[in-house]
Image (cartoon, rainbow, N blue to C red):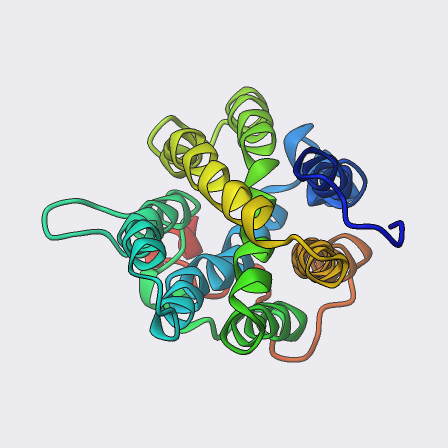
Length: 252
């Protein structure tokens, strides 16, 4: 970054460049997943660990809102919590993710317990929650801008998983279809907020570092999955094939 402040359009371009070079759609595990090269147990390991991230999202958003004095920002951010936690009579993103793990044969209580999640997964999502709770509001909002790049990965995931895996159906991928609408809306608001509030060189550096950090949170989770379930070096206590499944699945 130069020593002068970027224009809003230049800042947006710099943020988008981070996604182009660092977003986790570039990770070998996702290429393997979307290309149909994962075993059922590798897909299960991914979905089980990713639940930890899904579950932390409304918590980190609540942490942001708890210290936000800007009512307009709170009102806009509130729907992010209900999008994931749901409302009475309306399922949210966490419920839709549990439909995915249901479809993969997991017992819900096991998934929700996070008992079998990799240590690196737990560490990464907790680091993200603490980042949003402790950094400036600008940095907290900027860290959400991975949503700029999410629709592409969701589209790849829907097409690839439906095409390649006979244990995946439309109901199971409902989470990703819903995010095709939600993520662009959320990203547009957050991007506008960052462009309006990151005006000094230091503020812009903070925003760029925050987005970089978030891409590293996502990438680290896939590194851990690759080491555990592709290389074959899972951490002690991590999920092993056959564990946490419904009785009918475990007996199959």
